Length: 248
Image 1 (cartoon, one colour):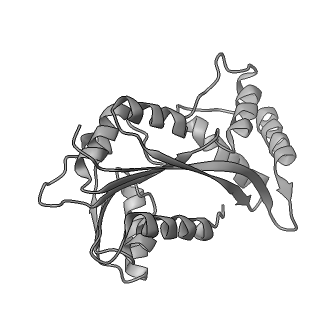
Image 2 (cartoon, one colour):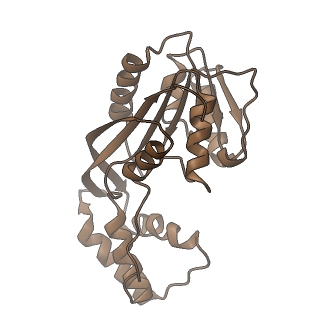
């Protein structure tokens, strides 16, 4: 699967550099950096970044990217954000999260972000329901032959904003149109990608008829090119930012 995010990431980083006065003296604490989508370009702009990442697989990818780009100012901590406690010898100017707040207690996580930051906090998250949600719903109906009993409400920006408001943090929100794109070599690759979500929740066994139905769904949702299949949809991204006023 291919998904080029460099242009959008660069746009967001330029915005944050201006809003947060980011320079070579800035330190950042990043939650759940994944493969380093924001970590690597940010590291080139700041003094140091400390990242908290629970996935050893993602850490390996990040380390490889650091080596490829000769970056040595990223400190990696292999922990869940829920279980992380900051060494107070490190006082990050900014605490940053990009689509990574899959936490047990959102209120406590937001408090921790605020209290650990010296100056600013930033959260990137969904401004609308996930672009690919409808495909998952159709596959779910196909596999289990029933519609979900209740609607799924993802962690969009409004829920995070409301919690911050209740904590006395009056954050700024910037909503932006964002083109979401996924490209697969073939329908089998696309099917495996979407089925991974269901496999992660437990063992999933499909018969040939079910698998064929899923590929049929994907053939209707994705657009065929000469040598690939692509899913493209415009959605919204929310950037939630606030200036640290006090510990809460």
